[in-house]
Length: 249
Image: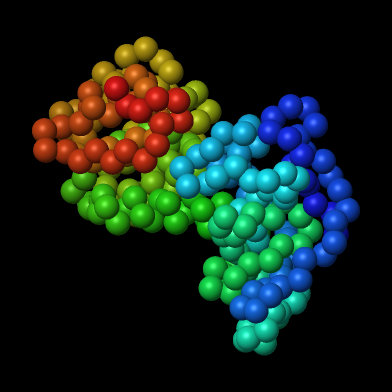
């Protein structure tokens, strides 16, 4: 099979497309003929040689990629024969190996892809989607909430906008740039603004006409998040990252 192999941390020759032996599933595993592979932020950090949390730097060369979707074409010992030929999505965990034509996954990690969802959408949901669901379990948005979502056009942010809308809440989506703000509106944000523009927090207040933010989701951090400034007394603030490079200030 062909696979993208990492040979160095950073630099112009870090990744190479190579022919490597086909992987074979072990006991309790399946082999997936990959239709789509996710490029997670953790993958990009490892490629730079940056250790992130529990994800230790791997020995090189290796095949990156922790999220794959495709059709199962081979079963390991002990796996239900009914899995053969099914389209699935899986998070490969610490094993990696997703940037390839074939990948091996534990059967316990599999999620069957419904017919209405393509492989790209399934990969987007297996990592980002489960993070979003964990955030929602903590936040528990309701129809009474006015919800602020920063980075509202990003992976998690766009899902949170839709979740707030589906809960019946008033969704306030803010994102960096006019096109991204417009996308937040298309996804269901009642109020959508570009937070690179001066005075955007005041514009949000004006649009809400006296209503306060009761729930804020922030994955931007730094001094552009705006969540502290807009959050009303007794409101809930859920921090899930800082794409700006520093936590919310």
